[in-house]
Length: 538
Image 1: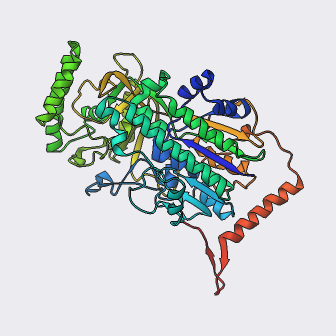
Image 2 (image 1 turned 30 degrees about the vertical axis):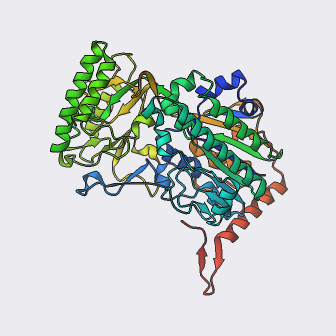
Image 3 (image 1 turned 90 degrees about the vertical axis):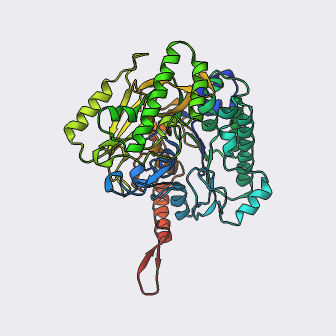
């Protein structure tokens, strides 16, 4: 029994269902009619790095060590420099391809994010998103040459100029064409590997939906023909995989998170500053004052109905270096903060596209103060729409238990639908419209906790609308579908409700025992001195 995980970054039923109903996606329709469909929740947090690693390991962040694109080298309050470095792979935990390799299963892993450098597996791995532009991104290393012979113009991800082309030009054509080209090459490589290489398990990931939906949510959600061409190409790739499955094989379509439109933003760091929980160094304080003047001017212009003029004013102020340094969407806010007087702050700009906020908390913030902060956040209401700011609020325990649990306390905030967070300073009104920089009439696309799960194939129920599942459930469920033991201490569970009941025979029990014995033989080898050495440990 073989299995395929077909992963799509940012896939959402908000787009899939209308396209299925319109007849654009026959292969996704096939999964819906002849398999199981469920919402796959991603909450802790709904962000690409953490979510993909949870999909791959069945663990929460405390088990695999990935919370964001960034890792802080020291605690902010330790007196150090609080430097941040980019993560390109998980820090710990075994991924499903490691588990299957130890069991002797042959695996193909294609472009899963945060897999650089690639793991040594019983098969082939091609690293995915966050892989440096140079370096050996395949295992074995020799496969790189074969890859480029099979697909000479293969891409791991889009070029930076393509990713930001809509923002720079205001036109979608370049981003759409680049995404389609990359995706077709990904499908070509996957099809080649499935046909030419022996395999028991394949995990392939596509990132195009996320790349398109952030700047082009309005076009995609309105089913603009050009904008949704990507999903038709994706459906074609799905069909090619379905054609290669036997009746005993299973296929799972998963997304690391969902997507939605954001109409409004809330300035979480300005809020913490107003509550005297965040204190600034002298340089950052001066930048905030400059940004406050700009924000006030922008608000006045907006009240007068002169937003186009406001954009011209903003560009002029930027040219005069009067807008501060709050437009950086990459480097975390980790310098020029008065740490002695700070008890809460949000360092990561990932919160805006991610649709969440991860608040770092100092130990000096006692239980009563934390309770007051939580209650105040839950009481906040958007003055324009009347919606509450907070949909769900979690403490550090939501990240799970494990060797990579956070050193500091956290408060994880998920906003109400249509709202996201900004980390800039200076907007004392706290609320603002979420609009694209190149077109103030269009809303931004941001992450949402509700992702996608389809299960299809041998032993899977047909036409079943399954209950909600969590991303940690995927690994144990896939192992179960392959008839393998599920005894790895996952944070997730086997989604038994997806499968038809199968009679357990003595032969099946013996088969399970044989698999366990095979695993033990692979994990342990006798050294000459009589000691045992564990093979394949992290």
